Length: 177
Image 1 (cartoon, helix red, strand yellow):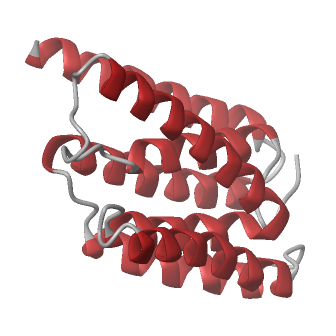
Image 2: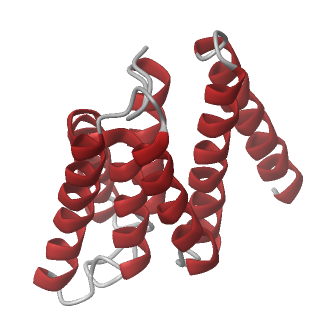
Image 3: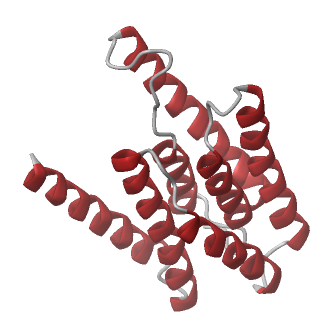
């Protein structure tokens, strides 16, 4: 099973990076930035699946980088970047407060990152994909009794899936596809 998981992780990661290269081929800088964003999402997904943690050592620098890039990239709408981060991160922060920690703070920080990386409009799209995907899988896990109501369900994979889909189909805060 361990070899199988490693092969799947490597294959999916290679596919994601290949798609980024294909979709953002006009500008090497865009490829590099989006690949770095994807690396953040992949690492956070892996650690959440394995240890139910989203590492601060990854999310804090990622948030700073996404805000900085959103403010300095020539085609980025600065207000869109800041409002996008505030809305997506704020939504997850509110969920964490309302569920009394049912939504972890790592997920909140990862959501701030994706909002700053995507901006408002694309961040909302990613948020919807995240909510639908996470909700459907949570219901399936609960109905099949693979998870109980109090069991943790890693949410970073759903945040990452929503963000990656939007990055590959629509773009980021600084470049539309």
